[in-house]
Length: 73
Ligand SMILES: [Zn+2]
Image (cartoon, rainbow, N blue to C red; front, top):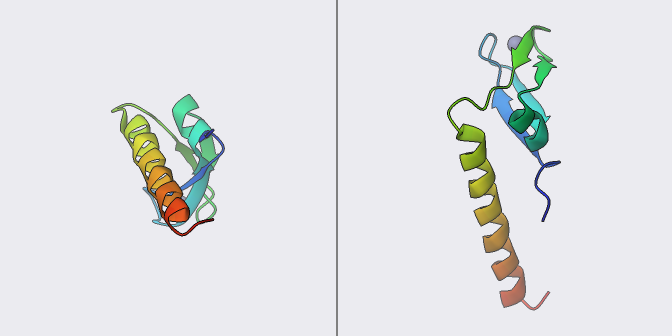
């Protein structure tokens, strides 16, 4: 499964507004404009947080897949 287009949400560090970006944006360290305060937020993968998040998302999808199989879909 390609996770790079999956949307993640995060709070603006300045105003707390919940913004969304794609995993790909975060990995690439893209900057987005906060919808709440219109300031630029730099998405930085400085602490490998994004990779950890991707891993957790992947685990969630795996669990979802198992749940679907269990119910015969
Ligand atoms: Zn903001």
